[in-house]
Length: 500
Image (cartoon, rainbow, N blue to C red):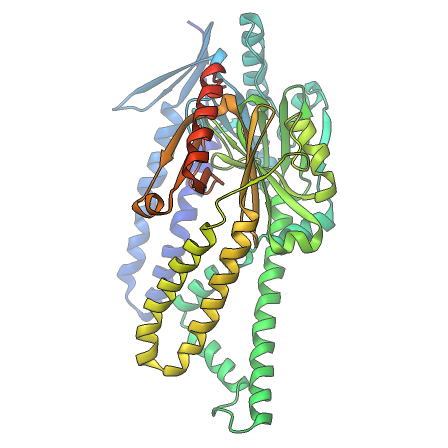
Protein backbone atom coordinates (compact mmCIF):
# COMPACT_ATOMS: atom_id res chain seq x y z
CA UNK A 1 0.00 0.00 0.00
CA UNK A 2 1.38 3.46 -0.84
CA UNK A 3 2.60 5.49 2.11
CA UNK A 4 0.23 7.95 3.70
CA UNK A 5 0.90 11.66 4.00
CA UNK A 6 -0.05 14.11 6.73
CA UNK A 7 -1.04 17.74 6.61
CA UNK A 8 1.64 20.28 7.38
CA UNK A 9 2.15 20.68 11.16
CA UNK A 10 1.13 24.33 10.93
CA UNK A 11 -2.38 23.13 10.05
CA UNK A 12 -2.99 23.19 13.83
CA UNK A 13 -2.16 26.90 13.85
CA UNK A 14 -4.44 27.67 10.92
CA UNK A 15 -7.31 25.69 12.44
CA UNK A 16 -6.92 27.75 15.61
CA UNK A 17 -6.82 30.96 13.58
CA UNK A 18 -10.06 29.98 11.86
CA UNK A 19 -11.65 29.30 15.23
CA UNK A 20 -10.29 32.57 16.59
CA UNK A 21 -11.86 34.52 13.74
CA UNK A 22 -15.28 33.28 14.80
CA UNK A 23 -14.53 33.87 18.49
CA UNK A 24 -12.72 37.18 18.32
CA UNK A 25 -15.81 39.43 18.38
CA UNK A 26 -17.63 37.60 21.20
CA UNK A 27 -14.28 37.33 22.97
CA UNK A 28 -13.73 41.07 22.82
CA UNK A 29 -17.26 41.67 24.05
CA UNK A 30 -16.64 39.30 26.95
CA UNK A 31 -13.41 41.04 27.89
CA UNK A 32 -14.97 44.51 27.72
CA UNK A 33 -17.96 43.28 29.72
CA UNK A 34 -15.56 41.94 32.33
CA UNK A 35 -14.14 45.40 32.94
CA UNK A 36 -16.97 46.00 35.36
CA UNK A 37 -15.62 43.44 37.77
CA UNK A 38 -17.64 40.40 36.70
CA UNK A 39 -14.56 38.26 36.31
CA UNK A 40 -16.52 35.11 35.69
CA UNK A 41 -17.02 36.22 32.06
CA UNK A 42 -13.30 35.81 31.49
CA UNK A 43 -13.61 32.15 32.34
CA UNK A 44 -15.92 31.85 29.35
CA UNK A 45 -12.80 32.19 27.23
CA UNK A 46 -11.95 28.66 28.35
CA UNK A 47 -14.14 27.62 25.43
CA UNK A 48 -11.07 27.96 23.19
CA UNK A 49 -9.69 24.76 24.71
CA UNK A 50 -12.05 22.45 22.75
CA UNK A 51 -11.05 24.27 19.56
CA UNK A 52 -7.40 23.61 20.33
CA UNK A 53 -8.01 19.94 21.02
CA UNK A 54 -10.09 19.66 17.86
CA UNK A 55 -7.31 21.20 15.75
CA UNK A 56 -4.71 18.80 17.17
CA UNK A 57 -7.00 15.80 16.71
CA UNK A 58 -7.74 16.81 13.14
CA UNK A 59 -4.04 17.04 12.35
CA UNK A 60 -3.32 13.65 13.88
CA UNK A 61 -6.16 11.86 12.08
CA UNK A 62 -6.05 13.47 8.63
CA UNK A 63 -4.21 11.34 6.06
CA UNK A 64 -4.05 11.20 2.29
CA UNK A 65 -2.29 8.91 -0.15
CA UNK A 66 -1.90 8.44 -3.88
CA UNK A 67 -3.23 5.08 -5.02
CA UNK A 68 -2.84 3.76 -8.53
CA UNK A 69 -6.04 5.32 -9.88
CA UNK A 70 -7.35 7.57 -7.12
CA UNK A 71 -6.59 9.99 -4.36
CA UNK A 72 -7.59 8.57 -0.97
CA UNK A 73 -8.32 10.85 2.00
CA UNK A 74 -8.93 9.48 5.51
CA UNK A 75 -10.30 11.56 8.36
CA UNK A 76 -11.78 11.06 11.82
CA UNK A 77 -10.98 9.04 14.94
CA UNK A 78 -14.28 7.77 16.34
CA UNK A 79 -16.26 8.29 13.16
CA UNK A 80 -13.81 7.45 10.41
CA UNK A 81 -14.32 8.64 6.86
CA UNK A 82 -12.41 7.42 3.83
CA UNK A 83 -12.95 9.29 0.58
CA UNK A 84 -11.80 7.96 -2.79
CA UNK A 85 -11.45 10.55 -5.55
CA UNK A 86 -10.54 9.05 -8.95
CA UNK A 87 -7.85 11.06 -10.72
CA UNK A 88 -10.01 11.15 -13.84
CA UNK A 89 -12.71 13.10 -11.93
CA UNK A 90 -10.42 15.82 -10.60
CA UNK A 91 -10.93 19.04 -12.54
CA UNK A 92 -8.92 21.47 -10.53
CA UNK A 93 -6.45 21.67 -7.68
CA UNK A 94 -6.86 25.19 -6.36
CA UNK A 95 -4.83 26.96 -3.71
CA UNK A 96 -5.23 29.95 -1.45
CA UNK A 97 -2.57 31.88 0.41
CA UNK A 98 -2.84 34.76 2.83
CA UNK A 99 0.27 36.55 4.20
CA UNK A 100 0.69 33.97 6.97
CA UNK A 101 0.56 31.17 4.40
CA UNK A 102 3.23 32.90 2.34
CA UNK A 103 5.41 33.49 5.38
CA UNK A 104 5.30 29.78 6.30
CA UNK A 105 5.39 28.62 2.65
CA UNK A 106 2.18 26.63 2.89
CA UNK A 107 -1.22 26.86 1.17
CA UNK A 108 -4.83 25.83 1.58
CA UNK A 109 -5.56 23.25 -1.10
CA UNK A 110 -8.92 22.48 -2.68
CA UNK A 111 -9.48 19.42 -4.82
CA UNK A 112 -12.43 20.01 -7.10
CA UNK A 113 -14.54 17.71 -9.21
CA UNK A 114 -17.69 18.35 -11.21
CA UNK A 115 -19.83 16.73 -8.57
CA UNK A 116 -21.00 19.54 -6.30
CA UNK A 117 -21.07 23.16 -5.26
CA UNK A 118 -18.28 22.63 -2.72
CA UNK A 119 -14.76 21.37 -3.33
CA UNK A 120 -14.48 17.59 -3.10
CA UNK A 121 -11.74 17.92 -0.50
CA UNK A 122 -10.13 20.75 1.46
CA UNK A 123 -6.64 20.19 2.79
CA UNK A 124 -5.65 22.80 5.35
CA UNK A 125 -2.72 23.16 4.99
CA UNK A 126 -0.01 21.58 2.81
CA UNK A 127 3.55 22.68 2.25
CA UNK A 128 4.26 24.06 -1.21
CA UNK A 129 6.40 21.01 -1.88
CA UNK A 130 3.50 18.70 -0.98
CA UNK A 131 1.16 20.76 -3.17
CA UNK A 132 3.63 20.51 -6.01
CA UNK A 133 3.87 16.76 -5.50
CA UNK A 134 0.08 16.38 -5.50
CA UNK A 135 -0.26 18.28 -8.73
CA UNK A 136 2.47 16.34 -10.46
CA UNK A 137 1.04 13.01 -9.32
CA UNK A 138 -2.48 13.86 -10.45
CA UNK A 139 -1.27 15.22 -13.78
CA UNK A 140 0.85 12.15 -14.40
CA UNK A 141 -1.90 9.69 -13.47
CA UNK A 142 -4.49 11.50 -15.58
CA UNK A 143 -2.12 11.65 -18.53
CA UNK A 144 -1.49 7.91 -18.18
CA UNK A 145 -5.24 7.28 -18.21
CA UNK A 146 -5.74 9.56 -21.21
CA UNK A 147 -7.98 11.94 -19.25
CA UNK A 148 -7.85 15.74 -19.64
CA UNK A 149 -5.25 17.26 -17.33
CA UNK A 150 -6.83 19.39 -14.59
CA UNK A 151 -6.15 23.00 -13.85
CA UNK A 152 -3.00 23.32 -11.82
CA UNK A 153 -2.44 26.93 -11.07
CA UNK A 154 0.51 27.58 -8.85
CA UNK A 155 0.16 29.66 -5.73
CA UNK A 156 2.21 32.75 -5.27
CA UNK A 157 5.49 31.56 -3.90
CA UNK A 158 5.26 28.07 -5.39
CA UNK A 159 8.21 28.65 -7.69
CA UNK A 160 8.61 25.06 -8.80
CA UNK A 161 5.00 24.84 -9.89
CA UNK A 162 5.02 28.16 -11.65
CA UNK A 163 8.07 27.22 -13.65
CA UNK A 164 6.27 24.18 -15.04
CA UNK A 165 3.11 26.00 -15.99
CA UNK A 166 2.72 27.20 -19.54
CA UNK A 167 1.70 30.80 -20.04
CA UNK A 168 -1.50 31.47 -21.91
CA UNK A 169 -3.16 34.30 -23.78
CA UNK A 170 -3.93 37.17 -21.45
CA UNK A 171 -7.61 38.06 -21.68
CA UNK A 172 -7.98 40.46 -18.74
CA UNK A 173 -5.39 42.33 -16.66
CA UNK A 174 -6.70 44.96 -14.26
CA UNK A 175 -4.61 48.07 -13.59
CA UNK A 176 -5.20 50.64 -10.85
CA UNK A 177 -7.74 52.55 -12.96
CA UNK A 178 -9.78 49.38 -13.42
CA UNK A 179 -9.61 48.72 -9.68
CA UNK A 180 -10.87 52.21 -8.92
CA UNK A 181 -13.69 51.72 -11.43
CA UNK A 182 -14.53 48.34 -9.91
CA UNK A 183 -14.64 49.87 -6.44
CA UNK A 184 -16.94 52.66 -7.59
CA UNK A 185 -19.27 50.19 -9.30
CA UNK A 186 -19.32 47.44 -6.68
CA UNK A 187 -20.74 49.09 -3.61
CA UNK A 188 -19.07 46.76 -1.07
CA UNK A 189 -18.22 49.71 1.16
CA UNK A 190 -21.70 49.37 2.67
CA UNK A 191 -20.63 46.05 4.18
CA UNK A 192 -17.72 47.76 5.92
CA UNK A 193 -19.98 50.57 7.09
CA UNK A 194 -22.45 48.00 8.43
CA UNK A 195 -19.68 46.23 10.35
CA UNK A 196 -18.45 49.56 11.75
CA UNK A 197 -21.96 50.45 12.88
CA UNK A 198 -22.24 47.06 14.56
CA UNK A 199 -19.04 47.62 16.50
CA UNK A 200 -20.08 51.18 17.37
CA UNK A 201 -23.36 49.84 18.68
CA UNK A 202 -21.53 47.31 20.85
CA UNK A 203 -19.36 50.02 22.42
CA UNK A 204 -22.12 52.62 22.81
CA UNK A 205 -20.62 54.98 20.25
CA UNK A 206 -23.77 55.34 18.17
CA UNK A 207 -25.47 57.82 20.51
CA UNK A 208 -22.47 60.13 20.61
CA UNK A 209 -22.19 59.99 16.81
CA UNK A 210 -25.83 60.95 16.38
CA UNK A 211 -25.34 63.74 18.92
CA UNK A 212 -22.55 65.16 16.76
CA UNK A 213 -24.78 64.94 13.69
CA UNK A 214 -27.63 66.74 15.47
CA UNK A 215 -25.22 69.55 16.41
CA UNK A 216 -24.41 69.97 12.75
CA UNK A 217 -28.05 70.17 11.66
CA UNK A 218 -30.39 73.03 12.68
CA UNK A 219 -32.30 72.18 15.85
CA UNK A 220 -35.68 73.46 14.68
CA UNK A 221 -37.59 72.95 11.46
CA UNK A 222 -36.90 75.72 8.92
CA UNK A 223 -39.41 78.58 9.04
CA UNK A 224 -38.34 80.55 5.98
CA UNK A 225 -36.69 80.00 2.62
CA UNK A 226 -33.16 80.72 3.84
CA UNK A 227 -33.59 78.33 6.73
CA UNK A 228 -34.91 75.64 4.40
CA UNK A 229 -31.97 76.09 2.03
CA UNK A 230 -29.54 75.91 4.93
CA UNK A 231 -31.13 72.69 6.18
CA UNK A 232 -31.10 71.15 2.71
CA UNK A 233 -27.46 72.11 2.10
CA UNK A 234 -26.29 70.72 5.42
CA UNK A 235 -28.24 67.52 5.00
CA UNK A 236 -26.95 67.17 1.44
CA UNK A 237 -23.41 67.70 2.71
CA UNK A 238 -23.80 64.89 5.23
CA UNK A 239 -25.30 62.59 2.62
CA UNK A 240 -22.53 63.39 0.14
CA UNK A 241 -19.84 62.79 2.78
CA UNK A 242 -21.42 59.44 3.62
CA UNK A 243 -21.55 58.41 -0.03
CA UNK A 244 -17.94 59.44 -0.58
CA UNK A 245 -16.89 57.41 2.48
CA UNK A 246 -18.76 54.34 1.21
CA UNK A 247 -17.21 54.65 -2.25
CA UNK A 248 -13.72 55.06 -0.81
CA UNK A 249 -14.17 51.93 1.27
CA UNK A 250 -15.43 50.13 -1.83
CA UNK A 251 -12.30 51.15 -3.73
CA UNK A 252 -10.13 49.87 -0.86
CA UNK A 253 -12.04 46.57 -0.92
CA UNK A 254 -11.52 46.37 -4.69
CA UNK A 255 -7.76 46.84 -4.32
CA UNK A 256 -7.60 44.15 -1.63
CA UNK A 257 -9.61 41.62 -3.61
CA UNK A 258 -8.60 42.22 -7.22
CA UNK A 259 -5.03 43.51 -6.95
CA UNK A 260 -3.00 41.93 -9.74
CA UNK A 261 -6.05 40.29 -11.31
CA UNK A 262 -5.12 38.42 -14.46
CA UNK A 263 -7.23 36.07 -16.53
CA UNK A 264 -5.46 33.87 -19.05
CA UNK A 265 -6.63 31.30 -21.53
CA UNK A 266 -4.45 28.22 -21.58
CA UNK A 267 -5.74 25.69 -24.08
CA UNK A 268 -9.39 25.05 -23.21
CA UNK A 269 -9.11 26.48 -19.73
CA UNK A 270 -9.33 29.90 -18.07
CA UNK A 271 -6.90 30.62 -15.27
CA UNK A 272 -6.92 33.56 -12.93
CA UNK A 273 -5.14 34.88 -9.89
CA UNK A 274 -5.77 37.96 -7.75
CA UNK A 275 -5.57 39.36 -4.24
CA UNK A 276 -3.38 41.77 -2.33
CA UNK A 277 -3.54 40.16 1.11
CA UNK A 278 -5.16 36.79 0.42
CA UNK A 279 -4.14 35.56 -2.99
CA UNK A 280 -6.48 33.25 -4.82
CA UNK A 281 -5.65 31.16 -7.85
CA UNK A 282 -8.40 29.43 -9.79
CA UNK A 283 -9.06 27.69 -13.05
CA UNK A 284 -12.17 27.01 -15.06
CA UNK A 285 -12.42 24.60 -18.00
CA UNK A 286 -14.41 26.30 -20.73
CA UNK A 287 -16.73 23.33 -21.16
CA UNK A 288 -18.00 23.78 -17.58
CA UNK A 289 -19.50 27.17 -18.44
CA UNK A 290 -23.26 26.83 -18.65
CA UNK A 291 -24.38 30.45 -19.00
CA UNK A 292 -22.38 33.57 -19.79
CA UNK A 293 -23.75 36.83 -18.42
CA UNK A 294 -22.91 40.46 -19.06
CA UNK A 295 -23.98 43.04 -16.50
CA UNK A 296 -23.95 46.81 -16.88
CA UNK A 297 -24.89 48.94 -13.92
CA UNK A 298 -25.51 52.65 -14.36
CA UNK A 299 -22.02 53.36 -13.02
CA UNK A 300 -20.59 50.82 -15.49
CA UNK A 301 -22.07 52.79 -18.35
CA UNK A 302 -20.73 56.07 -16.99
CA UNK A 303 -17.25 54.57 -16.89
CA UNK A 304 -17.55 52.72 -20.22
CA UNK A 305 -17.17 49.31 -18.61
CA UNK A 306 -19.12 46.15 -17.87
CA UNK A 307 -18.83 42.86 -15.99
CA UNK A 308 -18.72 39.36 -17.46
CA UNK A 309 -19.53 36.34 -15.30
CA UNK A 310 -20.26 32.67 -15.84
CA UNK A 311 -22.55 30.13 -14.28
CA UNK A 312 -20.74 26.84 -14.04
CA UNK A 313 -21.64 23.26 -13.41
CA UNK A 314 -20.07 21.38 -10.58
CA UNK A 315 -17.87 22.61 -7.81
CA UNK A 316 -16.53 26.08 -7.69
CA UNK A 317 -14.35 28.36 -5.71
CA UNK A 318 -13.91 31.97 -4.94
CA UNK A 319 -12.29 34.06 -7.49
CA UNK A 320 -13.32 33.83 -10.74
CA UNK A 321 -14.49 31.75 -8.21
CA UNK A 322 -17.02 31.87 -5.42
CA UNK A 323 -20.39 29.96 -5.58
CA UNK A 324 -21.45 28.79 -9.02
CA UNK A 325 -21.33 32.34 -10.34
CA UNK A 326 -17.81 33.28 -11.27
CA UNK A 327 -16.62 36.69 -12.35
CA UNK A 328 -14.48 36.15 -15.39
CA UNK A 329 -13.93 39.87 -15.90
CA UNK A 330 -14.90 41.93 -12.83
CA UNK A 331 -14.61 45.05 -14.93
CA UNK A 332 -13.94 45.18 -18.66
CA UNK A 333 -13.94 48.07 -21.15
CA UNK A 334 -17.10 47.62 -23.16
CA UNK A 335 -15.16 48.04 -26.41
CA UNK A 336 -13.31 44.80 -25.55
CA UNK A 337 -16.44 42.70 -25.05
CA UNK A 338 -16.60 41.26 -28.58
CA UNK A 339 -12.95 40.18 -28.45
CA UNK A 340 -13.40 38.67 -24.99
CA UNK A 341 -16.47 36.68 -26.02
CA UNK A 342 -14.72 35.40 -29.12
CA UNK A 343 -12.04 33.88 -26.87
CA UNK A 344 -14.40 32.46 -24.26
CA UNK A 345 -17.46 31.62 -26.36
CA UNK A 346 -16.42 31.62 -30.04
CA UNK A 347 -19.23 32.64 -32.34
CA UNK A 348 -21.19 34.60 -29.74
CA UNK A 349 -21.77 38.21 -30.81
CA UNK A 350 -24.26 40.27 -28.83
CA UNK A 351 -24.22 43.06 -31.40
CA UNK A 352 -25.17 40.79 -34.30
CA UNK A 353 -28.18 38.93 -32.87
CA UNK A 354 -31.74 39.81 -33.88
CA UNK A 355 -33.54 40.67 -30.64
CA UNK A 356 -37.23 39.88 -30.30
CA UNK A 357 -39.33 41.77 -27.78
CA UNK A 358 -41.81 40.41 -25.28
CA UNK A 359 -45.55 41.14 -25.53
CA UNK A 360 -45.98 44.95 -25.52
CA UNK A 361 -49.05 44.58 -23.29
CA UNK A 362 -46.66 43.53 -20.53
CA UNK A 363 -46.13 47.19 -19.64
CA UNK A 364 -49.82 47.51 -18.80
CA UNK A 365 -49.64 44.51 -16.49
CA UNK A 366 -46.51 45.81 -14.80
CA UNK A 367 -48.02 49.26 -14.31
CA UNK A 368 -51.25 47.89 -12.84
CA UNK A 369 -49.37 45.59 -10.48
CA UNK A 370 -47.00 48.33 -9.36
CA UNK A 371 -49.72 50.92 -8.87
CA UNK A 372 -51.74 48.43 -6.81
CA UNK A 373 -48.79 48.01 -4.46
CA UNK A 374 -48.30 51.78 -4.23
CA UNK A 375 -52.00 52.26 -3.48
CA UNK A 376 -51.95 49.69 -0.66
CA UNK A 377 -48.88 51.32 0.88
CA UNK A 378 -50.46 54.76 0.56
CA UNK A 379 -53.40 53.91 2.84
CA UNK A 380 -51.40 53.66 6.09
CA UNK A 381 -49.14 56.49 4.90
CA UNK A 382 -52.19 58.79 4.60
CA UNK A 383 -53.17 58.21 8.23
CA UNK A 384 -49.59 58.82 9.37
CA UNK A 385 -49.22 62.07 7.44
CA UNK A 386 -51.35 63.17 4.47
CA UNK A 387 -48.31 64.85 2.97
CA UNK A 388 -46.80 61.41 2.41
CA UNK A 389 -49.25 60.99 -0.46
CA UNK A 390 -46.84 63.12 -2.44
CA UNK A 391 -44.36 60.26 -2.20
CA UNK A 392 -47.04 57.93 -3.50
CA UNK A 393 -47.40 60.07 -6.61
CA UNK A 394 -43.63 59.97 -7.06
CA UNK A 395 -43.50 56.19 -6.69
CA UNK A 396 -46.44 55.84 -9.09
CA UNK A 397 -44.56 57.84 -11.71
CA UNK A 398 -41.47 55.66 -11.20
CA UNK A 399 -43.59 52.53 -11.65
CA UNK A 400 -44.84 53.79 -15.01
CA UNK A 401 -41.36 54.77 -16.20
CA UNK A 402 -39.85 51.47 -15.05
CA UNK A 403 -42.51 49.36 -16.78
CA UNK A 404 -42.28 51.17 -20.10
CA UNK A 405 -38.48 51.13 -20.18
CA UNK A 406 -38.34 47.48 -19.11
CA UNK A 407 -40.65 46.29 -21.87
CA UNK A 408 -38.54 48.10 -24.45
CA UNK A 409 -35.36 46.54 -23.08
CA UNK A 410 -36.44 42.96 -22.31
CA UNK A 411 -36.09 40.46 -25.14
CA UNK A 412 -34.62 37.23 -26.43
CA UNK A 413 -32.87 35.95 -29.52
CA UNK A 414 -31.89 32.68 -31.14
CA UNK A 415 -28.66 32.70 -33.06
CA UNK A 416 -26.55 29.77 -34.12
CA UNK A 417 -26.71 27.15 -31.38
CA UNK A 418 -27.46 29.62 -28.58
CA UNK A 419 -30.28 31.42 -26.90
CA UNK A 420 -29.82 34.99 -25.71
CA UNK A 421 -31.87 36.80 -23.10
CA UNK A 422 -31.64 40.37 -21.82
CA UNK A 423 -33.53 42.33 -19.18
CA UNK A 424 -33.26 45.42 -17.03
CA UNK A 425 -32.88 49.00 -18.20
CA UNK A 426 -31.20 50.54 -15.15
CA UNK A 427 -28.98 47.54 -14.45
CA UNK A 428 -28.76 45.82 -17.81
CA UNK A 429 -28.17 42.08 -17.87
CA UNK A 430 -27.65 39.90 -20.91
CA UNK A 431 -27.11 36.14 -20.81
CA UNK A 432 -26.49 33.46 -23.38
CA UNK A 433 -26.38 29.67 -23.29
CA UNK A 434 -25.75 26.94 -25.80
CA UNK A 435 -28.67 24.65 -26.58
CA UNK A 436 -26.50 21.73 -25.42
CA UNK A 437 -26.41 23.22 -21.90
CA UNK A 438 -30.19 23.31 -21.50
CA UNK A 439 -31.50 20.96 -18.82
CA UNK A 440 -35.22 21.68 -19.12
CA UNK A 441 -37.67 24.05 -20.77
CA UNK A 442 -40.89 24.77 -18.89
CA UNK A 443 -43.98 26.68 -19.94
CA UNK A 444 -45.52 28.41 -16.93
CA UNK A 445 -48.89 30.20 -16.85
CA UNK A 446 -50.48 32.03 -13.95
CA UNK A 447 -54.21 32.89 -13.92
CA UNK A 448 -53.26 36.43 -14.96
CA UNK A 449 -51.17 35.05 -17.82
CA UNK A 450 -54.12 32.99 -19.09
CA UNK A 451 -56.40 36.03 -18.90
CA UNK A 452 -53.97 38.05 -21.03
CA UNK A 453 -53.08 35.19 -23.36
CA UNK A 454 -49.46 35.16 -22.20
CA UNK A 455 -47.03 32.58 -20.82
CA UNK A 456 -43.59 32.43 -19.26
CA UNK A 457 -40.75 30.27 -20.53
CA UNK A 458 -38.28 29.00 -17.94
CA UNK A 459 -35.07 27.65 -19.44
CA UNK A 460 -32.90 25.97 -16.85
CA UNK A 461 -29.26 25.01 -17.07
CA UNK A 462 -26.97 23.24 -14.63
CA UNK A 463 -25.32 25.27 -11.92
CA UNK A 464 -27.58 28.32 -11.97
CA UNK A 465 -27.47 29.96 -8.55
CA UNK A 466 -30.07 32.07 -6.82
CA UNK A 467 -28.27 35.27 -7.82
CA UNK A 468 -27.90 34.22 -11.43
CA UNK A 469 -29.56 35.97 -14.34
CA UNK A 470 -31.89 33.09 -15.06
CA UNK A 471 -33.14 32.46 -18.57
CA UNK A 472 -36.74 32.93 -17.48
CA UNK A 473 -38.54 34.88 -20.18
CA UNK A 474 -41.75 36.39 -18.86
CA UNK A 475 -44.68 38.00 -20.67
CA UNK A 476 -44.41 36.15 -23.96
CA UNK A 477 -47.47 35.73 -26.18
CA UNK A 478 -48.64 32.19 -25.49
CA UNK A 479 -48.27 31.03 -29.09
CA UNK A 480 -44.72 32.39 -29.19
CA UNK A 481 -43.86 30.70 -25.90
CA UNK A 482 -45.18 27.33 -27.12
CA UNK A 483 -43.28 27.63 -30.40
CA UNK A 484 -40.09 28.59 -28.59
CA UNK A 485 -40.47 25.75 -26.10
CA UNK A 486 -40.86 23.19 -28.89
CA UNK A 487 -37.88 24.61 -30.75
CA UNK A 488 -35.55 24.64 -27.74
CA UNK A 489 -36.66 21.23 -26.47
CA UNK A 490 -36.02 19.70 -29.89
CA UNK A 491 -32.55 21.25 -30.09
CA UNK A 492 -31.69 20.23 -26.54
CA UNK A 493 -32.78 16.66 -27.24
CA UNK A 494 -30.57 16.43 -30.34
CA UNK A 495 -27.45 17.60 -28.56
CA UNK A 496 -25.58 15.65 -25.94
CA UNK A 497 -25.32 17.40 -22.60
CA UNK A 498 -21.82 17.62 -21.23
CA UNK A 499 -21.73 18.10 -17.51
CA UNK A 500 -18.00 18.42 -17.57
